[in-house]
Image 1 (cartoon, rainbow, N blue to C red):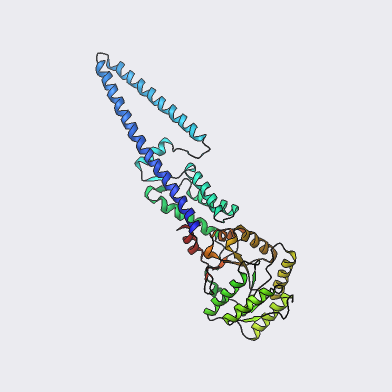
Image 2 (cartoon, rainbow, N blue to C red):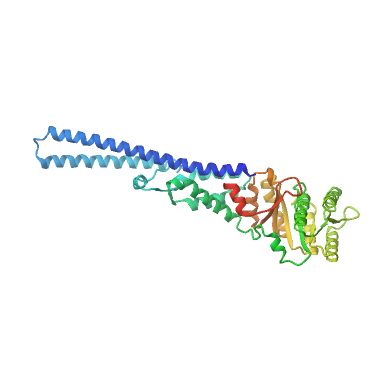
Length: 389
């Protein structure tokens, strides 16, 4: 799970490590070369002194001083030319200053500069977009990572460890609004029964199947559930949730005919739960496109009648950025409280970050397979560890 996106972060870390190792190797080679030049220069000066020993000492000292001054001037000019050439390379390769190079040779720490980070950050940004992370979200992640690493002094032997830590911290900040964090049952204990949950999402996202999986999850916790077949416009949807209810042993409140008012069916389900002391009411809803105004008006009516304790948007992880747009539209219309991401077992995983960043609502569960048991509570730390290694 999440193998592709995880590889993107691994590649980013490796590129930074390799870049710094190459710089250290170049520093070492430059040091050896300077040492050889210095030795040759001393031999040449000693030879000149020996051949001209009849010249007075003060004249010799003056000549040597002038030679050293000229040599220093030449080195300074070469460094300035090198620096100007590097700065013209669009900031992709910015050499460390002379002082930084000397410090790097004699100390155990290095400093990641803007020049070190820019190429790797840009490559990471493109890789995130390729992994279904929305453009705006990928930019935010990269900005966080850049700010955390820029001018940071790091032990040479701990580059991978430090960079990986800052990546994880940046991702956790994106998911910081997850107020539930794997504590759904604890949250339920604070609510009055029946706990009313309504599910939104478009057709094909796995919404009804997710309702069934969630129901099974609660049955395993010794909780009782009733389903409301609120998608009354599609006969297939009514039949689908009825089959799930039959297989799981969960009562389904459904309309006698297609097209019945969805809010009325859901109201009946709530009344049934109250009369039979049921712990949860799960309401399915119509799954037409989020741009359908009639659909959104119907969703608003359902919310007014049901007064749900939790409004859940079901996202299809395979749809990538489309899931982000859908989440935004439903959130603007009815005010989403939480998100369940379906089909995570076959997805890249990037949409989780995008949805959390875009609508600032918690991811509470993930669908991770085909069976009723294949659902798990979402834990940000676990997710980030899977992403970044």
